[in-house]
Length: 421
Image (cartoon, rainbow, N blue to C red; front, side, top):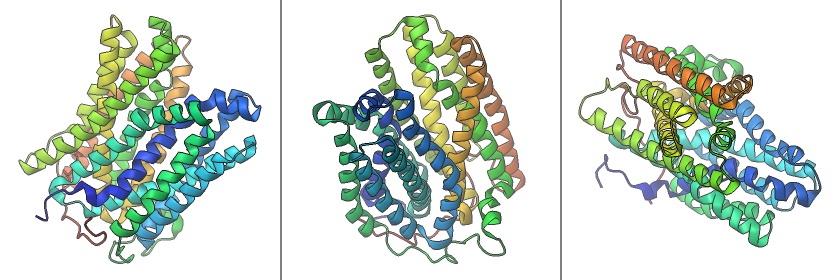
């Protein structure tokens, strides 16, 4: 097989994990009423499990990304996978709120360890010509967790109780372990991976991504973009109920559309970046394009005339979201190869930070529709303008004029780990 060919089966183990992570992230919300009723707590109390997952991930991901950069992908990935299996098994036997919260916190810790290692592994081992496509497929499978995994989990919960959904996650994780043991082999030593430990303490190494000009700008753009994207998404259900008086089941169908848009955007973003690089058009400014598309999608969703245009807006919204994430992951994987996992972890942490800020800003408005339009569309435009600074920074650094997938002109890393399936 050509060194530039893409064999998706080589990544079957990590792709399966990404699907399970995507399912985990969105699974608890639709199960909240059932969980709360079963363990005899309020729905707001049961929602602390979601909060525990998100907070633990956001706080620990940069530090665990550093461990991956220092000690190799295999160890961190396998440790995170084992903890993810255990945490879902614990959730499946939870009979009290505290045990459920602890299990969700451990799941967040597991995803924070394995997630950045997965993205770094793909960036390091995928041939340069198809790196965007490989990352895009990974993100598409993560999004499929919402489109396919969550409905399946809901069906299982309805047939056999909510614990069966978490048991299925544990079984799926166990099935991924043999694939990971085969496919993620020979992790490079810290020196081979360009470990950021040299001359830095732990805190300095964790913060090193903020010292890299292109990454610092990209993380700032990431925060603003997701304040518009996921911050506004927090109120999308409220907006659609207010505008169109949709039922809960209809809102569920909107959620499927959200996931489908993310899948399409992830695949599209990866392919656009790969094709641009292959044609020598590394200057393609995809980051600003995603910001503009997001602004249009949010505006149509919040204020477009009629439900059809509003649903078109939702689709554009999450096509932009999926493409943007792939753009950023590829930039993080190529701009500073010694900081791949740490940079990827910071992308997630700043995403959550932006989400919280955006949700607070939208909530400050008396009307959710007005807040979504002003904050969502407004900050999306700000992110598009700010994204141009990433292009300028890369040009001055001797890279390219874009943060688009694969657009950073650095030598492709050696494929130092993994065997072909």
